[in-house]
Amino acid sequence: MSASSPTDPMISHYRRVAREIGAGRVVPFLGAGANLCGRPEELTWRPGQFDWLPSGRELSNYLARMFDYEGKNEDDLVRVSQYVTLTVGAWPLYEELRRLFDGDYPPTALHRFLAETPTILRDQGAPRPYQLIVTTNYDDVLERAFRDVDEPFDLVTYDAEGQQRGKFTHHPHEGEPTTIFEPNIYYDLTTDERTVILKIHGAVNRADQSRDSYVITEDHYIDYLARTDVSKLFPVTLVEKLRRSHCLFLGYSLRDWNLRVILNRIWGDETLRSKSWAIQLNPDPVDEGLWNSR
Image (cartoon, rainbow, N blue to C red; front, side, top):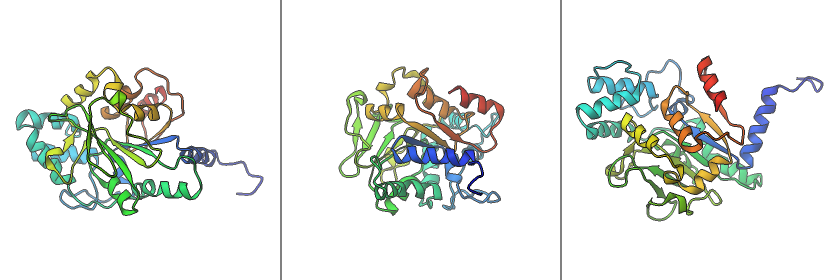
């Protein structure tokens, strides 16, 4: 492109987003599609082969076959998971999910980029080099990417079952995990010194199977929706960060109820004060309308 040629509008957009990332004002949201970054289109996911994680549809179809799902819409992970818990209980579902996610899947280029971002920003003298990263994924690939480059982080996970149901647990970079009983006055979480990874739909716990947690059934989502005050669910410092940041949604479709529940929990009917963006492959008009309405 010559010096007199008009600037590509997408290049200008990318520069604006990069500048906002450098200023610490962008929160990436990672959905199941983010784990497909770099995966060859012709590749078929194979359970038990720890090379690539499944998409939401692949996981749903696998569970439907495994547990003889008799309903419609085998692609509906929430519905299939609800069926499993009703017919055989939560433990078989959790055990099967652990079998799939308790593996050393290699980080994708996206995970490596997020893990290397703090170093890049520190080298450039950015005022806020650390990130808040939100994910609804159950795997630990993002955390492993950070460990691969010796980048410290705090981990915050949601408990969907057990005595701490409905609470978040803070796993600090150093120290013992802490259950957050009063999120509206919990101030021990900040991105001032290191990245915070917030797993709002639970996660596999590679060290302790009893702490596995998965927001995956219709009942789990009802639990989310039943909480009318966000300050009673999310740690206050992270809510403040979310409400004053741009959000960058990666690997989501608004046809996924999980994302719409998240948006409802964090913002409700509020109008977002910062521009946010979603990267989605071949969105249909309904999806585009839903995104624009937010």
